[in-house]
Image 1 (tube, rainbow, N blue to C red):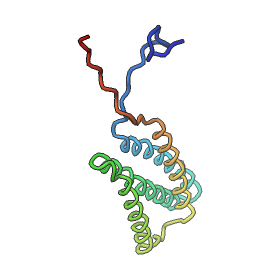
Image 2 (image 1 turned 30 degrees about the vertical axis):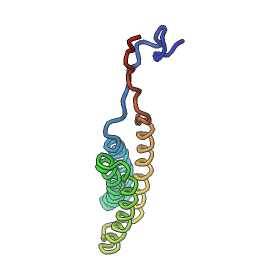
Image 3 (image 1 turned 135 degrees about the vertical axis):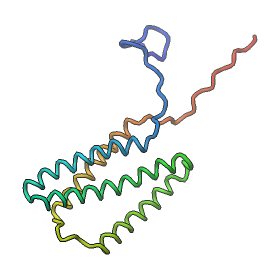
Image 4 (image 1 turned 180 degrees about the vertical axis):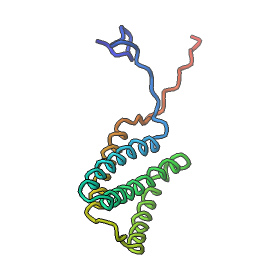
Length: 160
């Protein structure tokens, strides 16, 4: 069996085409991870509404949505900063992470917990969303096609 990259009979049913790098990596990660996060919200919401009614589903949804917002901000920063300043994107990730942690902590301490919030379902919704979001993000990142090396320049025919 030969590969399609070498001379000889092509393997498989057809030729293998050339594929470039993944377009809009960060938005693709956001889409896949958001879908997984929404799945976590649905799963925890079903259990919460059965066991604790409306307060349970509101609490689990609130916890999950906060997690989704927390992670989505980072992916959006990666998308916008990666285009204009790829070398500065990591620094922006660190700065954004610090701002998010401090900002969310301040908001939670200033606002406090609403009377309807059931802490158990809040935590369950948040943890389920973190686990599914991160698993989806790792999966989507593993499928991304990142171009590491420049494509070779075509050789000019020599007049020998």
